[in-house]
Amino acid sequence: MTRTPASATEKILHWSVATAVLLMVATGGVMYIPSLSEMVGQRFWVRTVHIASAVAFVFVLLLIPALRWPEIRRLELDLSFWDRADWDWFRRPWDVFVSTYQPADVPRRRFNGGQKLLAALVAISLALLVLTGVPMYWWSWFSSALVSRARDFHVLAAFGLAALLAGHIYLALLSPYGLLQGRIARERINR
Image (cartoon, rainbow, N blue to C red; front, top):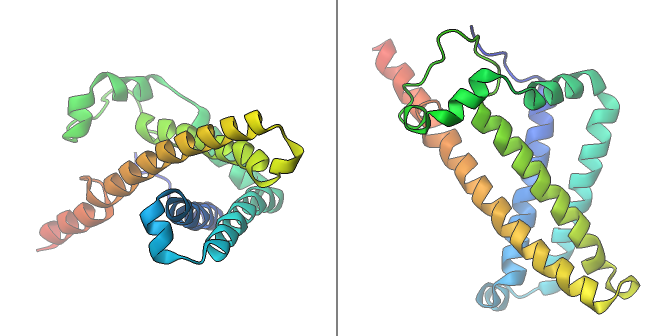
């Protein structure tokens, strides 16, 4: 069973969100790490790009489903439906890691268990970042204790998201099914 390729809507959603998130991670890192903040300077512009990226992220998440609901709904169903093959994927971590795991009696789905888990964790992290970013931006509307807790959770969610993204980029590029390794394997086959 072959995988269904991503639609243009999915690609636009992925790369729009990826661009906004990478900008937020970069600008957030500059604001959080004192030596980077001193080196870059321009705190006003760094903060402005950070907030503009957050607004763009929310805008994309509202606009694309409004324009392309059937495709987004199909993507959501593909990511949220878990079957036995997804659970088997987690029960055999070494086989998955060395890419020898192939469930024999279950048809292969579009996304494996790891991809579904990544999507869920990224969605949770991004929701936490948006929810904790609101009291940080409109700090005068909230108590200082709430703003302080929001900042702490914001930083924790950002670290978690950065770790997830690093793993995602690594696996997307260097895993046996990644872009670089897949290209190398196809070149070897074509020789």
